[in-house]
Image (cartoon, rainbow, N blue to C red; front, side, top):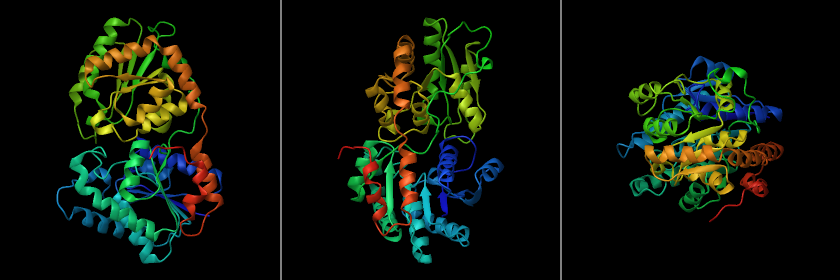
Length: 409
């Protein structure tokens, strides 16, 4: 059996796109399934070599401007042309889309229809129809028709379509929009279900024994809230004599190249380490090993319905979090006792939330450890998918029905 993973946004070692493909390949490889991938035309050498990635796509969801009425159709046509060239000699039995939007859905549908070889499709829909807006933002209403048509085409062309969203609220939105069942499952991420071991090199000689480390990791896109950190860290450093910070943020390639924020952070003293390199998977794990608490000061206006790959990885390794109130991805942490809310979206409230979390760190860490021991639903789902592939038309979703987490309608 052969699978094909398709992600037009996969281009570098850092970020959730790389982690998702790496995890999917590991899980499918465990089942004896070869799963090369198609990624961005701008994929770097490491991605091409490590993930058996063919550089294909000239645009992805992040490149959309939503600027004119014909943009959707133009994007679909270009993506289909690139797919047709890349799939000319590929005959997969299963296609997996770890980051699917309406453009990719429609393009793949037309490619499957053109080849008259329908296969099962498993797809995560990570974003609303406008990827920079929440699903309930009225400004995105005019893009709903694109999603309806794109996913309807894919459902008709595929031999079974199984759609997933990372949060219940996003799944509810797409259920109403598309009129079909949507499951809730975090996107593929780290497989580890315990905190990586911390080495002696992770603790500087000046740090007192047990000094907690607060980490912030990722690409420094504007909705990630890095601009709140200087005020927040100044407050924590003044009120907590032992806490230290590891702030990682990639400015190059982000939508908000604000180097000034990181320059301010670097001037806060030896208790604040600043890193701006793209992290390899091993380096990313090392940063998680260094942390006792993960800080996610994300803008709730952008994240009130969508998920977070870094958050999912924190859950996988049992790392407690501080996150903004109103972010859909963080609700499980708040409900299960391993997260602290940032009650208002500003630097002061962020600092106060970190101080509260540091005071409660033992209980938060214990709850995070319990959350990390929950079942591996991704592995179980792929087990069922491969065992029953290729199924009859429409049968893939029914086969996976017993594995669906309970969601609200």
